[in-house]
Length: 231
Image 1: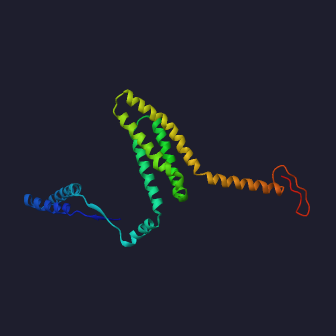
Image 2: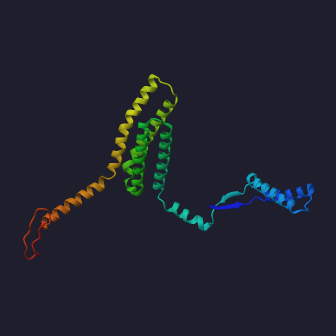
Image 3: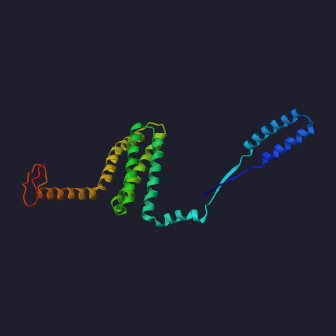
């Protein structure tokens, strides 16, 4: 987008009208009258600027300016774009609910759900092949969590205490503890492959260190392979 500024000419016209009116009412034959008219013109100009300000508007950028954004949109995988959109929608709704629900414990839980949700989706955006792992999370757990919080918000905002309202609110409050744990486990599960790879690398390294006599507590003797090494 390109920003443009359109200067308003009405304040200038008002200044001209001020000089004309002053000349018709008072003789401009002394320095004092010129000073008074100039001062009055300044006041009129400032007031005119306040009443008729300059207009600022935006227009689409040139083809060269729009090209990088267009290329970026073309290059982004549709699944990644959909994930990014879902993340923004979910986090925006969680923040709205957080602002609407005054309970400090629930607010802290929503903060946690928002943070973990962002991390889950960001991780899959960076690793699109893992999207199937969070299909149930995206299709059911996340939207249902938001649905429960919306129901809680509606009941809480009534300001009425009743058996149905109180019982439902208590169920949602208890469920939030479970959901926070479930969201944490979903994020942890996304790192199972990395954890397995690291565990395998560590096991292989430990075995090689032992074979080479480089693991802790060993004292291989020197020989053709080299001098004695103690760790």
